Amino acid sequence: MCDCGCGPQGCCDTTSMHRRFLTKHEEIENLKAYKTELEQEIRGVDERLKKLAE
Image 1: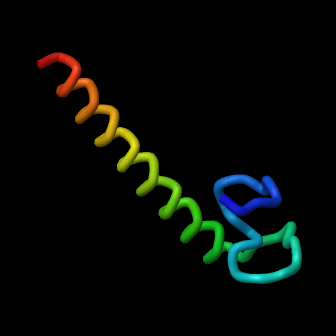
Image 2: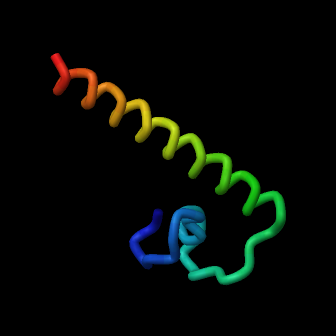
């Protein structure tokens, strides 16, 4: 997510202007990246739960 608060799509990551409209390809790529981040978060939570249960 970029610092402007635009959300997980990170519209400001590659340009200095604040974009409102992404191409379909950009939106798909951003959603894929967001999904990967969520999956990593889930793995981290699972690891933490396992460690706490020991």
